[in-house]
Amino acid sequence: MASTPLPPASTPSSGTSTVAIDLGDRSYDILIGEGLLQNPATFAGLPKSSKALIVTNTTVGPLYTAALRAAIAPHHKAVLDVELPDGEQHKDWPALNQIFTKLLEEAADRKTVLYALGGGVIGDMTGFAAACYMRGVPFVQVPTTLLAQVDSSVGGKTAINHPAGKNMIGAFYQPQRVICDLATLDTLPQRELLAGLAEVIKYGPIADAEFLSWLEAHMDQLLARDRAALKHAIQRSCEIKAWVVGQDEKESGLRAILNYGHTFGHAIESGLGYGEWLHGEAVGAGMVMAADLSTRLGLIDEATSQRIRALIARTGLPVTAPDLGADRYLELMQVDKKAEGGEIRFVVIGPLGQAGMRPAPESVVRDVIAFHTR
Ligand code: NAD
Ligand code: GLY
Image (cartoon, rainbow, N blue to C red):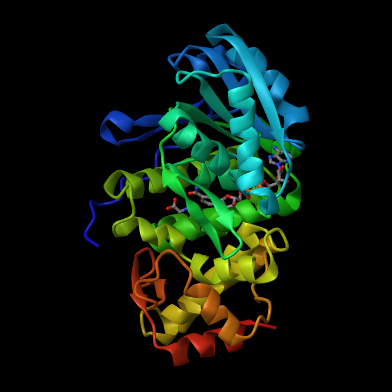
């Protein structure tokens, strides 16, 4: 997995920051700052169209639809909205179809701009709807969870779940812009903030050991929602994701490292039933298991995997996975998108700050599962 060197972290600044996603004619910016929803400059240069549709859910809609509507009203003759049911268990065909029904009932044309206002569930579904409606309409990501601001809104992966596998039905489809308003995180429940921190932490072990040290030094500020600390964490996460996606948009290799902890994590999520554990919680426990797997494969020493575990534990995220039984874990992990010809492949760390992907002997995987489940 050859790659260009990771650019250094930008110097922290108090104003709005921009991270560029460089994908030729599909390039776009991620804006990170406070009060972006109230600032007309945030929306300058986005496609203008007769209609726009804000896709949100019953939790986020009442909080932020009015502000977004006011901000984009000058760009469209009509701003419509649709509120989907809230929850990972509704990342499915019926909820997706509600978006299409609204668009068709309102005779939305192929220039209609979709705005995804919410967390990763809304972002993934809106992106997929945008990829499909009339074979593709523009969309803008307005992520309102930490997880969505650091990961899911960036890079163009869109999907819904199938009962047999998470995010299995979807498309690569890039947004026009990603707008991360730090102020929206004020209303985020603490459990959701922690779930987002799991995806922040992952960037350290896979790409940037210095960032891991920064996270260790600033975890208390992050847990207390210090705006400057959150801004730096979001910006560095987006910079790392931009570096990965810019080299491997469609995951032919390098991009798979972003799934560190996700092979175990997805098994936890689908094994328990979507919505039982949050995605970030499952990734937290999954990263502990994948770090230990890396140690058992001789790629990092025991102290390094303990260091990763300690940081995850400090956030309050689960570090022990549910006991689904090793056979069930193996069965669930075979449905993972990284599996090839029925062989499960894991993102492993080694050395710290670098990741690769490989299969592992079943006996070692069984040992990891036995050690980390209860
Ligand atoms: P989510 O979208 O379910 O949001 C979490 C909860 O927070 C929901 O109840 C939501 O209504 C609520 N919420 C959102 N913003 C809020 C706010 N500002 N104030 C109060 N409540 C708010 O979950 P998530 O963690 O954002 O995203 C998880 C999803 O993202 C999963 O489906 C996962 O598969 C997907 N994901 C996708 C990618 C990708 O690259 N596309 C990457 C990582 C995760
Ligand atoms: N979150 C994994 C990816 O975007 O590839």
